[in-house]
Length: 299
Image (cartoon, rainbow, N blue to C red; front, side, top):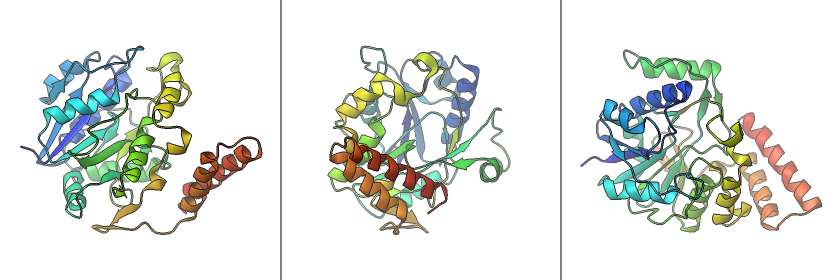
Protein backbone atom coordinates (compact mmCIF):
# COMPACT_ATOMS: atom_id res chain seq x y z
CA UNK A 1 0.00 0.00 0.00
CA UNK A 2 1.40 3.36 -1.03
CA UNK A 3 0.50 6.62 0.67
CA UNK A 4 0.10 8.68 -2.52
CA UNK A 5 -1.18 7.73 -5.97
CA UNK A 6 -0.47 10.11 -8.84
CA UNK A 7 -2.74 9.53 -11.82
CA UNK A 8 -2.97 11.22 -15.19
CA UNK A 9 -4.54 10.86 -18.63
CA UNK A 10 -1.76 11.67 -21.11
CA UNK A 11 -2.18 12.82 -24.69
CA UNK A 12 -1.13 10.50 -27.54
CA UNK A 13 2.63 10.02 -27.72
CA UNK A 14 2.67 10.47 -31.49
CA UNK A 15 3.89 14.09 -31.59
CA UNK A 16 7.66 14.15 -30.88
CA UNK A 17 7.52 17.15 -28.53
CA UNK A 18 4.47 15.89 -26.62
CA UNK A 19 6.19 12.50 -26.35
CA UNK A 20 9.31 14.15 -24.91
CA UNK A 21 7.62 16.35 -22.30
CA UNK A 22 5.25 13.60 -21.15
CA UNK A 23 8.16 11.23 -20.67
CA UNK A 24 9.96 13.95 -18.69
CA UNK A 25 6.88 14.41 -16.52
CA UNK A 26 6.29 10.70 -15.83
CA UNK A 27 9.91 10.14 -14.84
CA UNK A 28 9.76 13.11 -12.47
CA UNK A 29 6.65 11.65 -10.78
CA UNK A 30 8.54 8.43 -10.18
CA UNK A 31 11.06 10.51 -8.25
CA UNK A 32 8.47 12.50 -6.28
CA UNK A 33 8.88 10.32 -3.17
CA UNK A 34 9.61 6.81 -2.00
CA UNK A 35 5.97 6.00 -1.24
CA UNK A 36 4.38 7.26 -4.47
CA UNK A 37 2.57 5.18 -7.09
CA UNK A 38 2.01 6.34 -10.68
CA UNK A 39 -1.02 5.35 -12.78
CA UNK A 40 -1.61 6.28 -16.43
CA UNK A 41 -5.23 6.21 -17.59
CA UNK A 42 -6.52 5.85 -21.14
CA UNK A 43 -5.86 4.21 -24.47
CA UNK A 44 -4.09 6.96 -26.38
CA UNK A 45 -1.49 5.95 -28.96
CA UNK A 46 1.74 4.87 -27.30
CA UNK A 47 0.37 5.02 -23.75
CA UNK A 48 0.46 1.30 -22.99
CA UNK A 49 4.00 1.02 -24.34
CA UNK A 50 5.27 3.97 -22.29
CA UNK A 51 3.62 2.64 -19.13
CA UNK A 52 5.32 -0.72 -19.67
CA UNK A 53 8.66 0.94 -20.42
CA UNK A 54 8.67 2.88 -17.14
CA UNK A 55 7.05 0.16 -15.08
CA UNK A 56 3.97 2.14 -14.05
CA UNK A 57 0.37 0.96 -13.93
CA UNK A 58 -1.87 1.43 -16.93
CA UNK A 59 -5.68 1.57 -16.79
CA UNK A 60 -7.43 1.34 -20.19
CA UNK A 61 -11.16 1.29 -20.93
CA UNK A 62 -11.85 4.89 -19.99
CA UNK A 63 -15.32 6.14 -20.97
CA UNK A 64 -15.53 8.79 -23.67
CA UNK A 65 -18.02 11.34 -24.98
CA UNK A 66 -19.48 11.43 -28.49
CA UNK A 67 -16.35 13.16 -29.78
CA UNK A 68 -14.16 10.38 -28.36
CA UNK A 69 -12.71 12.61 -25.64
CA UNK A 70 -12.05 10.81 -22.32
CA UNK A 71 -14.35 11.76 -19.45
CA UNK A 72 -13.00 13.13 -16.18
CA UNK A 73 -15.61 11.13 -14.25
CA UNK A 74 -14.32 7.85 -15.69
CA UNK A 75 -10.66 8.75 -15.18
CA UNK A 76 -11.25 9.53 -11.51
CA UNK A 77 -13.42 6.45 -10.98
CA UNK A 78 -10.79 4.14 -12.46
CA UNK A 79 -8.09 5.67 -10.26
CA UNK A 80 -10.25 5.40 -7.16
CA UNK A 81 -10.98 1.74 -7.85
CA UNK A 82 -7.39 0.81 -8.68
CA UNK A 83 -5.64 2.58 -5.81
CA UNK A 84 -5.64 1.98 -2.08
CA UNK A 85 -3.57 5.08 -1.28
CA UNK A 86 -4.79 7.50 1.36
CA UNK A 87 -4.14 10.44 -0.95
CA UNK A 88 -4.83 10.84 -4.67
CA UNK A 89 -3.20 13.32 -7.02
CA UNK A 90 -4.58 14.09 -10.45
CA UNK A 91 -1.97 15.91 -12.54
CA UNK A 92 -1.68 17.05 -16.14
CA UNK A 93 0.80 14.99 -18.12
CA UNK A 94 3.14 17.89 -18.95
CA UNK A 95 3.88 18.83 -15.32
CA UNK A 96 7.22 18.15 -13.65
CA UNK A 97 7.31 17.40 -9.92
CA UNK A 98 10.35 17.48 -7.67
CA UNK A 99 11.59 15.02 -5.02
CA UNK A 100 10.21 17.17 -2.18
CA UNK A 101 6.63 16.56 -3.35
CA UNK A 102 5.70 13.61 -1.11
CA UNK A 103 7.08 15.18 2.06
CA UNK A 104 5.23 18.43 1.49
CA UNK A 105 1.94 16.70 0.68
CA UNK A 106 2.20 14.61 3.86
CA UNK A 107 2.77 17.79 5.87
CA UNK A 108 -0.40 19.26 4.41
CA UNK A 109 -2.45 16.10 4.95
CA UNK A 110 -1.31 15.90 8.56
CA UNK A 111 -3.02 19.20 9.37
CA UNK A 112 -6.59 18.24 8.51
CA UNK A 113 -8.96 15.64 7.12
CA UNK A 114 -10.96 16.58 4.02
CA UNK A 115 -9.19 19.10 1.79
CA UNK A 116 -8.30 20.00 -1.77
CA UNK A 117 -4.80 21.28 -2.54
CA UNK A 118 -3.94 23.19 -5.72
CA UNK A 119 -1.24 25.61 -6.82
CA UNK A 120 0.21 27.80 -9.52
CA UNK A 121 2.76 26.56 -12.02
CA UNK A 122 5.95 27.83 -13.59
CA UNK A 123 5.97 27.81 -17.41
CA UNK A 124 9.25 26.74 -19.01
CA UNK A 125 10.17 25.84 -22.58
CA UNK A 126 11.92 22.45 -22.45
CA UNK A 127 13.12 20.90 -25.68
CA UNK A 128 15.35 18.07 -24.49
CA UNK A 129 14.96 14.93 -22.41
CA UNK A 130 15.81 15.59 -18.77
CA UNK A 131 18.84 13.90 -17.25
CA UNK A 132 17.55 12.63 -13.90
CA UNK A 133 20.97 12.35 -12.31
CA UNK A 134 23.11 14.51 -10.07
CA UNK A 135 21.40 17.81 -9.09
CA UNK A 136 18.70 17.78 -11.77
CA UNK A 137 16.00 19.16 -9.48
CA UNK A 138 17.95 22.14 -8.17
CA UNK A 139 19.36 22.90 -11.61
CA UNK A 140 15.88 22.88 -13.14
CA UNK A 141 14.49 25.15 -10.43
CA UNK A 142 17.28 27.64 -11.06
CA UNK A 143 16.57 27.51 -14.79
CA UNK A 144 12.85 28.09 -14.20
CA UNK A 145 13.56 31.18 -12.10
CA UNK A 146 16.01 32.45 -14.74
CA UNK A 147 13.95 32.04 -17.90
CA UNK A 148 10.56 30.70 -16.85
CA UNK A 149 7.41 32.51 -15.79
CA UNK A 150 5.01 32.02 -12.89
CA UNK A 151 1.60 31.47 -14.45
CA UNK A 152 -1.59 33.19 -13.25
CA UNK A 153 -4.13 31.61 -10.91
CA UNK A 154 -6.42 30.58 -13.78
CA UNK A 155 -4.03 27.77 -14.76
CA UNK A 156 -4.85 24.74 -12.59
CA UNK A 157 -2.74 21.67 -13.28
CA UNK A 158 -3.05 19.36 -10.29
CA UNK A 159 -5.44 18.35 -7.52
CA UNK A 160 -4.45 16.66 -4.25
CA UNK A 161 -7.19 15.19 -2.07
CA UNK A 162 -8.01 12.28 0.27
CA UNK A 163 -9.39 9.22 -1.49
CA UNK A 164 -12.86 9.59 0.07
CA UNK A 165 -13.49 12.82 -1.88
CA UNK A 166 -14.61 13.44 -5.48
CA UNK A 167 -16.33 10.08 -5.81
CA UNK A 168 -18.93 11.62 -8.13
CA UNK A 169 -17.94 14.08 -10.84
CA UNK A 170 -19.97 15.36 -13.81
CA UNK A 171 -19.08 13.93 -17.22
CA UNK A 172 -16.59 16.65 -18.12
CA UNK A 173 -14.35 16.27 -21.17
CA UNK A 174 -10.70 16.02 -20.12
CA UNK A 175 -8.26 18.54 -21.57
CA UNK A 176 -10.95 21.17 -22.05
CA UNK A 177 -11.67 24.26 -19.95
CA UNK A 178 -14.13 24.42 -17.09
CA UNK A 179 -13.80 21.13 -15.22
CA UNK A 180 -10.75 22.20 -13.22
CA UNK A 181 -12.57 25.34 -12.09
CA UNK A 182 -15.51 23.21 -10.94
CA UNK A 183 -13.21 21.13 -8.74
CA UNK A 184 -12.33 24.20 -6.67
CA UNK A 185 -15.93 25.43 -6.68
CA UNK A 186 -17.23 22.06 -5.48
CA UNK A 187 -14.67 21.89 -2.67
CA UNK A 188 -15.65 25.38 -1.52
CA UNK A 189 -19.33 24.44 -1.62
CA UNK A 190 -18.59 21.43 0.59
CA UNK A 191 -16.74 23.68 3.05
CA UNK A 192 -13.52 21.75 2.58
CA UNK A 193 -10.30 23.71 3.01
CA UNK A 194 -8.97 24.61 -0.43
CA UNK A 195 -5.24 25.02 0.08
CA UNK A 196 -2.99 27.04 -2.22
CA UNK A 197 0.42 25.35 -2.23
CA UNK A 198 2.02 27.97 -4.51
CA UNK A 199 4.14 29.62 -1.77
CA UNK A 200 5.81 26.30 -0.91
CA UNK A 201 5.54 23.92 -3.88
CA UNK A 202 7.15 24.54 -7.24
CA UNK A 203 5.87 22.66 -10.27
CA UNK A 204 6.97 23.17 -13.86
CA UNK A 205 4.69 23.19 -16.87
CA UNK A 206 6.56 22.31 -20.06
CA UNK A 207 5.34 24.62 -22.79
CA UNK A 208 3.66 23.14 -25.87
CA UNK A 209 1.37 24.08 -28.74
CA UNK A 210 -2.23 22.96 -29.29
CA UNK A 211 -1.77 20.93 -32.46
CA UNK A 212 -3.30 17.92 -30.67
CA UNK A 213 -6.66 19.74 -30.44
CA UNK A 214 -9.21 20.24 -33.25
CA UNK A 215 -8.02 23.03 -35.52
CA UNK A 216 -4.94 23.53 -33.35
CA UNK A 217 -6.84 26.07 -31.25
CA UNK A 218 -6.60 26.55 -27.50
CA UNK A 219 -9.11 24.47 -25.54
CA UNK A 220 -10.90 27.59 -24.25
CA UNK A 221 -12.45 28.09 -27.69
CA UNK A 222 -13.78 24.55 -28.14
CA UNK A 223 -17.44 23.58 -27.87
CA UNK A 224 -16.53 20.88 -25.34
CA UNK A 225 -15.22 23.62 -23.06
CA UNK A 226 -18.57 25.41 -23.23
CA UNK A 227 -20.29 22.13 -22.39
CA UNK A 228 -17.93 21.67 -19.43
CA UNK A 229 -18.75 25.12 -18.10
CA UNK A 230 -22.46 24.39 -18.40
CA UNK A 231 -22.06 21.04 -16.62
CA UNK A 232 -20.28 22.88 -13.83
CA UNK A 233 -23.18 25.26 -13.33
CA UNK A 234 -22.09 28.22 -15.43
CA UNK A 235 -19.34 30.83 -15.45
CA UNK A 236 -20.18 31.90 -11.91
CA UNK A 237 -18.82 28.54 -10.73
CA UNK A 238 -15.57 28.85 -12.68
CA UNK A 239 -13.37 29.26 -9.60
CA UNK A 240 -9.62 29.86 -9.77
CA UNK A 241 -6.75 29.35 -7.36
CA UNK A 242 -7.58 32.81 -6.01
CA UNK A 243 -10.68 31.25 -4.46
CA UNK A 244 -8.50 29.07 -2.21
CA UNK A 245 -9.43 29.74 1.41
CA UNK A 246 -6.12 28.49 2.84
CA UNK A 247 -2.47 28.60 1.88
CA UNK A 248 0.53 26.50 2.88
CA UNK A 249 3.47 28.59 4.07
CA UNK A 250 6.54 27.58 6.10
CA UNK A 251 5.08 24.16 6.85
CA UNK A 252 1.73 25.43 8.11
CA UNK A 253 -1.77 25.62 6.65
CA UNK A 254 -3.14 29.11 7.37
CA UNK A 255 -5.65 31.66 6.21
CA UNK A 256 -4.45 33.38 3.03
CA UNK A 257 -2.97 36.82 3.40
CA UNK A 258 -4.97 39.79 2.18
CA UNK A 259 -4.29 40.72 -1.44
CA UNK A 260 -5.78 43.18 -3.89
CA UNK A 261 -6.00 40.40 -6.46
CA UNK A 262 -8.36 38.41 -4.19
CA UNK A 263 -10.57 41.44 -3.59
CA UNK A 264 -10.86 42.31 -7.28
CA UNK A 265 -11.43 38.67 -8.21
CA UNK A 266 -14.25 38.47 -5.65
CA UNK A 267 -15.83 41.59 -7.15
CA UNK A 268 -15.54 40.12 -10.66
CA UNK A 269 -17.16 36.88 -9.55
CA UNK A 270 -20.04 38.80 -7.99
CA UNK A 271 -20.61 40.67 -11.24
CA UNK A 272 -20.60 37.42 -13.24
CA UNK A 273 -23.13 35.88 -10.83
CA UNK A 274 -25.45 38.77 -11.69
CA UNK A 275 -25.53 37.59 -15.32
CA UNK A 276 -23.81 40.73 -16.56
CA UNK A 277 -24.98 42.41 -19.69
CA UNK A 278 -23.87 45.67 -21.23
CA UNK A 279 -22.35 47.86 -18.52
CA UNK A 280 -22.06 44.98 -16.01
CA UNK A 281 -20.20 42.86 -18.55
CA UNK A 282 -17.75 45.69 -19.23
CA UNK A 283 -17.17 46.17 -15.50
CA UNK A 284 -16.48 42.45 -14.97
CA UNK A 285 -13.98 42.45 -17.83
CA UNK A 286 -12.21 45.49 -16.37
CA UNK A 287 -12.05 43.86 -12.96
CA UNK A 288 -10.45 40.77 -14.47
CA UNK A 289 -7.87 42.82 -16.35
CA UNK A 290 -7.09 44.69 -13.14
CA UNK A 291 -6.44 41.62 -10.98
CA UNK A 292 -4.51 39.91 -13.76
CA UNK A 293 -2.11 42.89 -13.93
CA UNK A 294 -1.73 42.91 -10.16
CA UNK A 295 -1.07 39.17 -10.05
CA UNK A 296 1.60 39.52 -12.72
CA UNK A 297 3.29 42.04 -10.41
CA UNK A 298 3.03 39.66 -7.48
CA UNK A 299 0.48 41.76 -5.58
